[in-house]
Amino acid sequence: MDGSALLLLKQLREFNRHPVEGISAGLIEESNPYAWNVILVGPSDTLYEGGFFKARLDFPKEYPIKPPKMKFISEIWHPNIEKNGDVCISILHEPGADQFGYERASERWSPVQSVETILLSVVSMLSDPNCDSAANIDASIMWRDDRTGFKKKVSECVRKTLEDM
Image 1 (cartoon, rainbow, N blue to C red):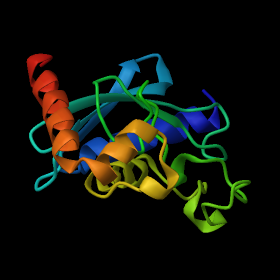
Image 2: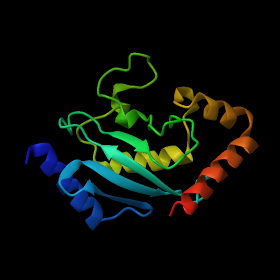
Image 3: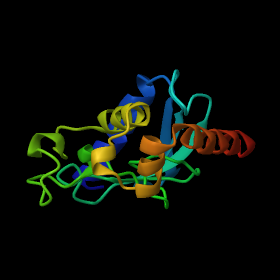
Image 4: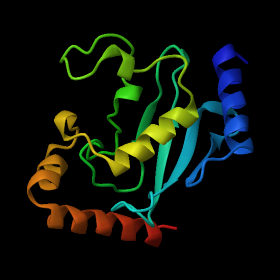
């Protein structure tokens, strides 16, 4: 087993030994440390509260030099999550300068990040969308211009997660 696989298994053990409230993670297949299932419980005092959102983390063989990709499997409506579920957050962007100038290099991926810091950042993102760098333009516009419609759409997503349990 290579170094990145061993590191991922170690991070999974640590994460499960010291769990973070509202987040669970595990391997999709025991033989593949590069693909993880994740469940995020919608944070309290947010529109996502009460939802159980399924996602997956896919790690490259070059981890931790390169960041993983995160994708929600559950339907979720959020300005920083593409309609197909791909998460767009600075911490998951390749290290270095942002060609569009929206992010500082210090906000982007760094090998000192861990699975825990990634997942905590995503939970934080659910509480505080960044509409200046939206991945889902429709959700961003709705967040800005039609908060009632946005809340209704998110409520539908929360309800669907409960039906899928």
